[in-house]
Image 1 (cartoon, rainbow, N blue to C red):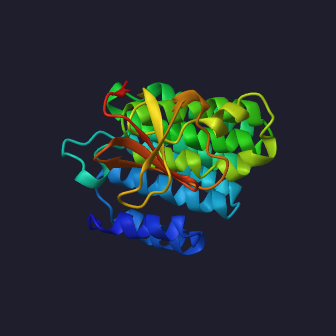
Image 2 (cartoon, rainbow, N blue to C red; image 1 turned 30 degrees about the vertical axis):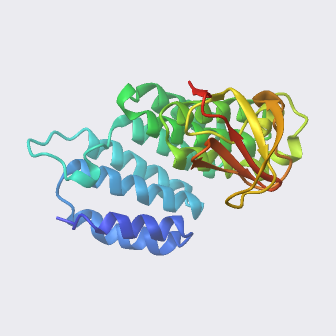
Length: 260
């Protein structure tokens, strides 16, 4: 059986864009992998690599092999590194493969299917899948639908406090920027950056800088009017409450603020 650490290194090869090496290593490893769930996952990873290489026919054959392996009954428990593998993952990642191959309509159908199949216990995965789908809609030239999908992912990631999922959505912002005046995109780009900690209510105090000991200027603004025009923000905990680090200084909400 393939070692549990092996899939991690294979994934790194793929995500580092060395798709050819990833596909070749997986071709060698899959026949030596015993558990059907593990084989299915490795087939799926190989399909992603082949899609990036634009090998349409071979990618589809590997996706079929992944489905067949997943449907194979095993009385042994799956290894921990692939115990989560399900038809939802197969559908969604299969949709990503087809999107990379230019089969957009079928890709969205599979992504929708994968998202619908996910149980409530896998909310993080759902947020990730929604972000993948938003990226695909954006590549399709449908920024309004892409923004709506990205907002769904962002809202879910905020609700479950999943900062990495939030970052995935935020990483799409440069691609959304040319569509800033498109319905939905403006809302996505203007979302407060205190995401992943719940929405913050209360009144903000503007601090002159983020340096320790900075004095409050006494300016108070409602949260809804606070907007960062450029640069990135990070949520931070400070003695004075909940805050955002922005290019213009530290915006801090008072202790009485609530998180919902």
